[in-house]
Image 1 (cartoon, rainbow, N blue to C red):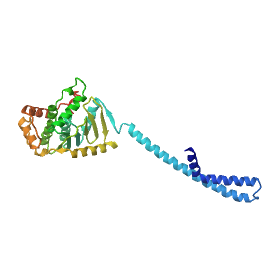
Image 2 (cartoon, rainbow, N blue to C red):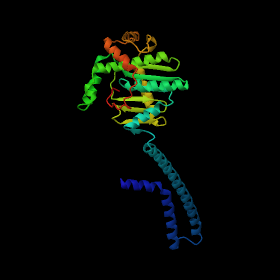
Image 3 (cartoon, rainbow, N blue to C red):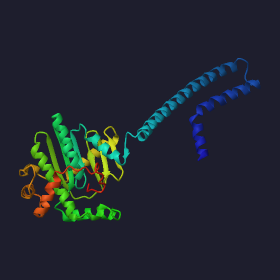
Image 4 (tube, rainbow, N blue to C red):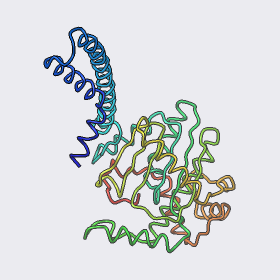
Length: 320
């Protein structure tokens, strides 16, 4: 390989080799008096001109190579700065997750959630974003993708997954399929309740997925935050100016489009404190099968409007 490399180098500089060989031959012949006086001068001048031309071209080549190396170095430095500056992707832990979510809710006009039961979204994100929209008199768009509560096998699989992953003695060990389904119904009920009272400000849509995931995605105008199983686990924040933001936004919108849309516009009226009868009637109206008894429906209505913040109150194992 070294021999071939040297041959390539010689071939690339063949013109220089030829000029020097000619100059050497002329010099030797002149010293041996083979060339008559005056004839050597006529030969040396063209050789010197050729040397000057080769030198100028070589300097031009070196300058071009130097410029290319400088551009590569600048590009490399820029990419490295992007990756190491913390502006592309940030890892969050503990209270930093709560602060990042709070900053994401500030002054946003949109929110896209993809997760499991949407407990934090219905308890904190939706009411707080809506409150800011009311204060600023602007419209806000909400898109939620959660699990289908009428799919018993799906809810059972989700519950078992978290039970299996939970350490001994943790709250997750006590999760039940019924508890998971009640959380899901509560998120849907909350979406309908807020929609009926804020038709001019709130554009909200709920879609049902049949895919399990340990992660949940919260996309606002300013950033994307990816969390998992509560604040006891690391999260990731991606600012809007990151090259990852638009890629994830497209991915989440594509996932949302494949989930089943609930026709919330068909929902029946709800009172300030929905009753079991109102709750059952509403689910039936939007085509959602429900087999909960009055006691469970009462619990669904209660937690639907309960603003318990799992981060602030340090409940790391709450269904998310």
